[in-house]
Image (cartoon, rainbow, N blue to C red):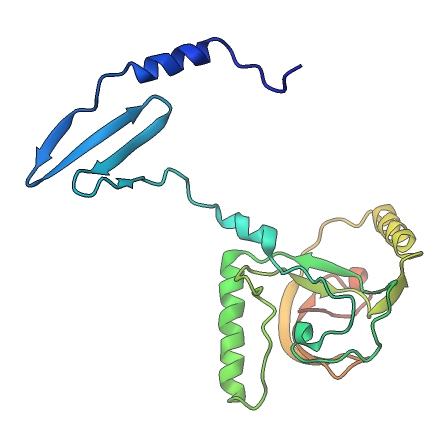
Length: 221
């Protein structure tokens, strides 16, 4: 069986295409232009001087959400590569089968929020006067806004054997808790030093219900 069955009308349409009258020409000044019509395509303008066709683009522009599909570049390396981490070296060497992990709530920025945080980082850089170099995590290498996250745990290491089980149990515990939607409010800026490395993050402390967070603030970065 053929993969594609064409109807007999296709051959008829092909014959009618060849039987079309020649294109009309009109003079415009010293040059001639002709428009060739095709039943299934847009007009193609042909310059009478050099005979080179000039096709008009009929493709629509890409939507702004297209860049979200490529928010970050794919990392192919399975060994330590400081160039992927702004020159930083791991405190714990990379081991195949170990997955550095943490629990967090993802924060997808709106356009006003993104613009405000970009301006905030610029103001902080101005205040630092070049004494400290900041690495911006608001935008990917491809120029797309990146989501922030509200940390709920310290970094932890999971193995390939237990990471799926851990995710299933953590997700089940959250669903069983039946936590209603809640709002968080930004409070202050702070510098946070990672307990297991020399990295320092500029974070936004956020607050919500004392019952939800156990009387503690969370940090968004």
